[in-house]
Structures are given as structure tokens and as C-alpha cells.
Length: 282
Image (cartoon, rainbow, N blue to C red; front, side, top):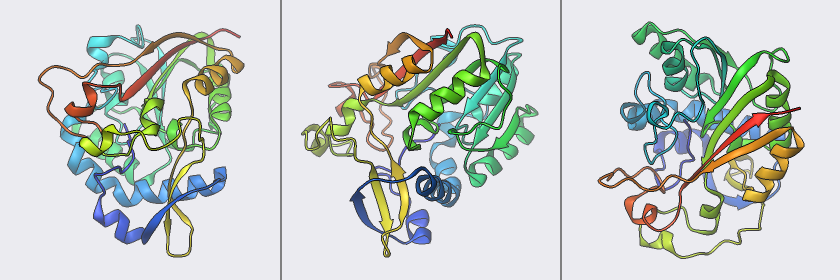
């Protein structure tokens, strides 16, 4: 699971990439891929040190609220299924799936995150197939998978969700399931802050201009895109992915862990995560 830097800025990545400021501007697919690949490569070690224990070596955590697939069952039966994870990070979800009898392929854009994925495979003895690839062009055969999933991976960081969803539909078999979690689109209107400053709306919900962090020359070092709930629904429908459920996890009682902009303060007032459950019906 990958989440944006937010207020949990990791200094090593910022210094390595020469982050100098923030911009809001159009960003092409190629520029976004270059920037986000470099960002997650630079941040992989600190990200794993910060979040690895919470995510586990072989566990499927959907979101900072701590929703686990073992409890939620959003994917349905996976034993004996061909499963694709898109934006796998260090691949704890893929290893959890493998441990439950799935034939799992996991891909990520970042070589740094995949290095941690390989190390996790060695530690656990669980070996999902690992691929380095972007989500807008999947290097996989059509009609190959029964389930596709993504826990905060890839979807917020790509220029075209239409391309991603079309590719997911292409590799799914009819009746296949596509389930993914993203930052709840409502969060776009608030500052990326877990404290009181993060409770006041400052950004138009309908402004879809990407959030971009740039170096001294203005080149993107990190890119995140905003879509409204309606944008997601329409794009899914166009790809033949029929929405079955939209899960908006409530903040669990007794859950005190901050993760970037996620916090008990904000979580008790409005949702931080949206989980889309869909079925491919061509």
C-alpha cells in the first residue's frame, strides 16, 4: 500500500530529489511515471521503516484505518484463483494472497519497493510473481485473472484512470473482480494535515488539477491526481466494471495511529478512504 508523503515528509527522498516547492499544473503520463518512480525509489527504505510493521510481512491491509481483508472479505474467495495486485509496494498483500492459495502476480513501478518485496518473499518463503511495470499498460495476457486488487497503489498516481481500468478489464476474465482503495475524494478539499488545520476546506472539490512537487528547475518529483467520486464511477462503467459497493471505512474505536493526514481527529468527522468493489461484466 502506498500513500502520498503528506505531512510525513521523509527527508532523505526530499533531499535526494531536490524538492523545492509545490505546484498545481497539468502533468503528462510520462512525466508522472518518471517522477513517481524516482520518488518511491528514493523513499522506499524510510517508507518500509515507518509503515512496515503496521502493514506486516504477509497481511492485507486496505487502508490506514486498518481494514484487513481477513475481516472484510472484499475480494471474495481467492484460493485457487489467479490474482493480480497493481501497485504492490513491498507486496505484503500479495504474500497474504499467496498464503491463501492464490496464484498471485504483483507489480509496481518502483524498483526500490520491489527490492523490499523480494526481501519479504525471502523472509516468509512466500513467492508471488513480482513484475516492474506501470498500471496504464499491463504487460500481461488478456483474460488471465479472476481477481485484481490495489491497496492505495498506482491509481492515485496515474494520468489516466480510463487507461488503468481498461487494462484491468482486459486482463480480467468475465465475472472477474476489481477492488481498489484510494484516498477518499472528499479529502481533496482539506489541507493534507492530521491536526486541526486539516478540518477547514480550502481546495475546490471540482478542481482536478494535479498536485505536483517540483525541484529547482520545475521538474516534477512527485505527482498525485484528483478525481471526484463521479469520475471514478463513470470511468469504471465505461470499462465494463460494474460497481457493486463503495466502502467508506469508519475510524475504529481505540485506533490511535496517525498515518500522514489520517488521524483519529479527522477520522471521526469524515471518511479518509474509499474502497471500490466492482465486477467485470463485458
